[in-house]
Image (cartoon, rainbow, N blue to C red; front, top):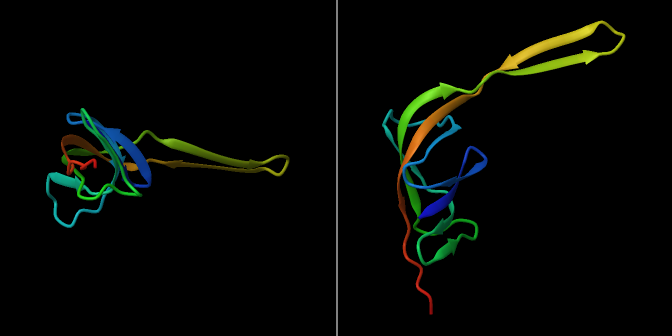
Length: 110
């Protein structure tokens, strides 16, 4: 069973047991359990449920493993022959999460 979720403006294909790095979320309370409700697709052994745009009643539960920072990205700007050079760096804050469970209501085919 796997699902496609959306978080931080990106889409991820997840299965139970996967560990992935997502954009840092502002949590109301510091809990170790996260719930992703923006589920775009769920596939189990027999059925595929596609959302329009979201699958109704589907959610993905994950556990917070830790907060990390992505590798540094260098941004270099210059204008030729003008003596203008500017070097900046950026490191994105990320959260490492482990996918525990995918919940979806079974679709009734008639």
